[in-house]
Image (cartoon, rainbow, N blue to C red; front, side, top):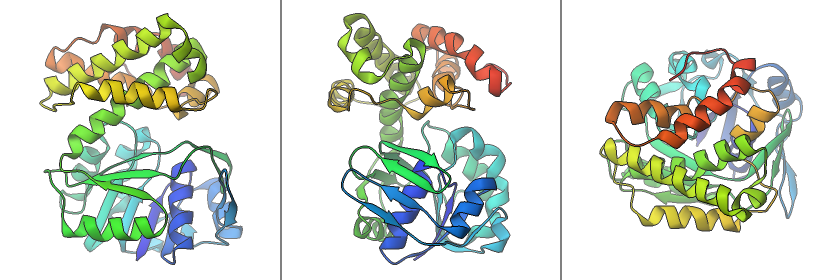
Length: 311
């Protein structure tokens, strides 16, 4: 399969490297130091059990230099998707599938607006991984878990083909009959994990151990569920218990990428995660008072590096 990975951070680097090792032809859309590292060395992945290297890979900052691919994985930060989407048209052929794997619930909408509905598939990924340096990825936990579904609901033959390729590369793939529920369920987990970790400046082991901050986690999850239901997405009640169980199973030092970006002075997904809960909650009249507090508390950090309006 001919694959283009847009973005060479932790997730893009890892998925691309796994597909290369499985024999697929992988190229990258990247910039700056990442572009140079990909061309010179490729991607070096360190996991709890091994280290492997792809070797030099084709990469360009200009999608037209790569040409149409069978699969395009959008692995940039969520805030980069909307401005980037119109530039990706040269990667799209008649049978191309485009999969966004960002946190949040709006990336696919931006891609549909720019590229049309036909190529875009709903996707999300769970993995604990960090970009250590350009072209270097450190995986902390298990192999990535990828969930795919057609935006209109259900699965399809094209999803089955992608799943077969990804599973052969070592990615744990689930095909979801309702990708919107899956996307909101991930937001219910990852957004409170990130925003409360950033507000408290604490890793998850601390947050979950203190009754007051653990209760805040659960309250934030209930607000995300309320906003989803207000938008017609029926996130089930037991999703909160499942998310808390996942929180309890995480390494005590774990932090989210949004948390790390905020406290380390990098552009973050605050507007696309916490801000989206606030903005979409206002639209449907769902309870989101805790998220108003979380967003307002973190906005000064975000504004230091990413001046932008409130949601």
